[in-house]
Length: 140
Ligand SMILES: CC(C)(COP(=O)(O)OP(=O)(O)OC[C@H]1O[C@@H](n2cnc3c(N)ncnc32)[C@H](O)[C@@H]1OP(=O)(O)O)[C@@H](O)C(=O)NCCC(=O)NCCS
Image 1 (cartoon, rainbow, N blue to C red):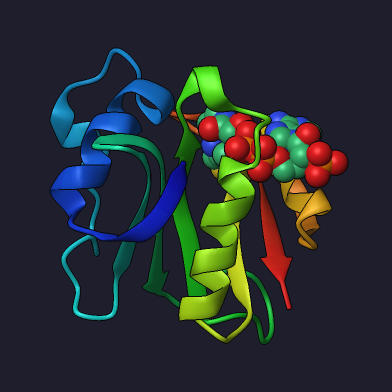
Image 2: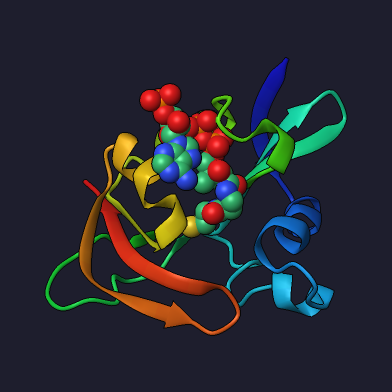
């Protein structure tokens, strides 16, 4: 059975490394803000195994005008379990924890997932050098 709980940054780093920063050193999966008091990390577990991760942090909207003050980042599910609802469970936990609008840098390949979860894209596609094409997305 999949459960979601808050976690330490050390618990999310291994899946960040395989799912989001493949082939890069561990330092590429440890990000500015990971240890801030307002940052929360989540893991989805299957028994003792971490099968999904997400983090949320207090960060101003980077776009023009007003926007959400909380950023979702580092969202990933173990490859074998993608499409089985783990990502949805993680977003539910994030939404229960931060009852405020969110923004994220979404991989273009994950845009459809976020749209199904009620997010909408804003602006043009841009490149994150170590992670490929992205879009800003927001969830009110
Ligand atoms: C994107 C990701 C986190 C989604 O997690 P997941 O556990 O696979 O998603 P779920 O199973 O909860 O899917 C929820 C819904 O979104 C759909 N969906 C999932 N991934 C999708 C995608 N990439 N494109 C379009 N739809 C997608 C599912 O089919 C499901 O739809 P349904 O409710 O109609 O059945 C996961 O696929 C992943 O880790 N991808 C690789 C890393 C990545 O891109 N992370 C996001 C960085 S911004």
